[in-house]
Image 1 (cartoon, helix red, strand yellow):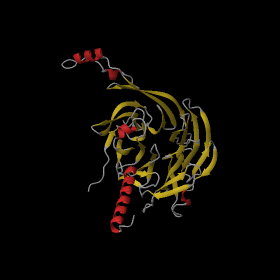
Image 2: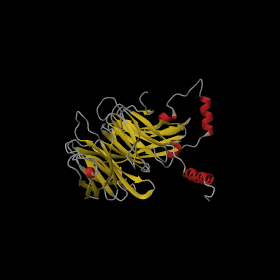
Image 3: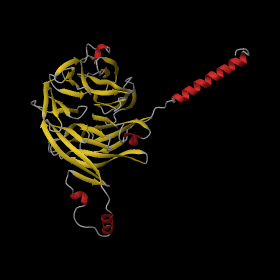
Length: 418
């Protein structure tokens, strides 16, 4: 049997590093680039329109936003506002999608000029500025808002950005180890504190205002504003690995299905050093209020590079440095889906198709859909088929039928039974 393959959804003209999905418009937003080096590789943010065509999920380029000499390395989405990490700064972008009204007179005039003769000059699309694109009645405009430097190390780089639950604040972390909180959309600094010695690898904001950060100093920390309220100790109920140092690679908050007030934290732990015999990486689920570890499971020997949690908190998506992609059940940490070396090079980001807005329409009969991007410039689609389950009413009907049959058999075997 051949190796399992994931369908390629889109190929960009530059390496891809960050990914977001807008549920309301059905837009897949992929960003990256070649950086400031004069290699001829562009930098940009691509807005892709997701559609179902002949029963298949597809993506087509709707708009390409040029970011000039800066490659976008991380993204966060809040409504129609994007926070893009570009080198040592955070750039806010606002995008707007409009449905154009058709003009019958213009259509008739255009149809007369097609065929043997065509007007000279640019097409209507080409005459539009770079920040605006029209396609098949859809118009997308992208506007640069505020930008601010967020990292101040000798080799500055913003590594992660995240909005809070009501999109009024965003948090950034980078190579200088500082967390900085910014007001949206002014990007006025609201808070700044030293969170880690060395680089911040990831951070996530919870609905109660708590912030979790993980860094290269082997620590996972829980903050309330600038106060340290807890530290994460994933090996409390997990494996004892005294000879192999591990560090936290990723952290994400997620909902608890069927519990509106429930909250979970998920983290990934990877070996700090690569060994000839690679030890496994681990996935841990935490109680979102006490920050005690609930369960820890091995997620294989491939080093995990990124983590995503589905909107409902049902699934976890993982990407690895060797290009593999996996989907796990969040409750049990059981792996449901796996494609080895789907990209063949490091997976830089993964994102689930949201379960609200246009999500159900685009998902079709599948249980979930995960998108992945990598340095190979490709965006791939990973579909999880719906798991077969027996309806509760059918189980009850079978139980009642079984009881009736049992009674009839007993009555026939023992006439005076009833």
